[in-house]
Length: 127
Image 1 (tube, rainbow, N blue to C red):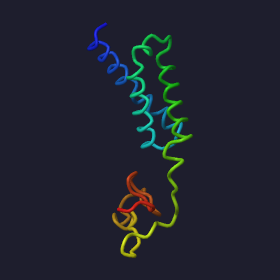
Image 2 (cartoon, rainbow, N blue to C red):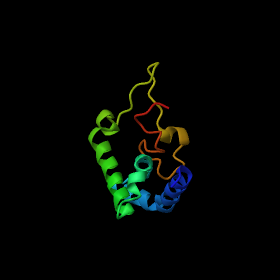
Image 3 (cartoon, helix red, strand yellow):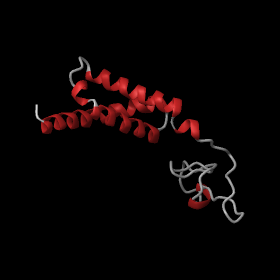
Image 4 (cartoon, rainbow, N blue to C red):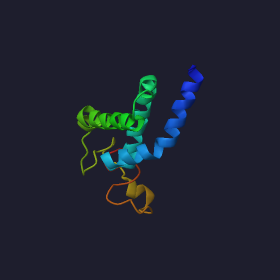
């Protein structure tokens, strides 16, 4: 098989299984944003191993194992180990408190309570 058909085969498989992978990732971590990150890391690893993976007896099981291993690796030593969240935001430069998402959006969003908001914005992150 030439390189182009191998790439098309990989792309076709990933396109067909993306939602399935995302649901499995969500079941593992209970966070859609983190699930997307897990799927991205998994399909990247699958791309690197594609020549070997496509010869597997059950390709879906092979990919599911990749996804679970990526999740476990992240649990052991990823950003979880380095990130410490607290209920009290750190002081910003100049002695003023760091604004939180609810104070910026005015509480217009239904998920916007007690410092929660979009993934990139929380009570412990300077805006």
